[in-house]
Length: 113
Image (cartoon, rainbow, N blue to C red):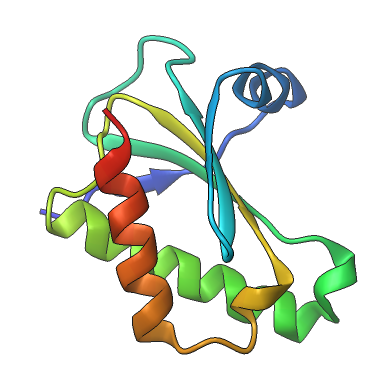
């Protein structure tokens, strides 16, 4: 069963999550932490791409890639559902191969305890 991805909704949630733990690599920066008691069947994650990365087409391509990787991570139990996540994309993600990005992010999600 695929869990539904729910985005962070309020500015306060973003600010609280930015004060929590973070992991970073050359493709993304991931902020994660416990925000509140939430439904364990839903994944609370938001994706952020800055305007400096490119036009809307390029930013949406990055978000589609990230969404696909997150769905695969949930499917293979690589991601912890008890946390809320904020994934901020970096410009290097645009020109890199999807398979390499996916492997790198799976390694990052395995580091989260």
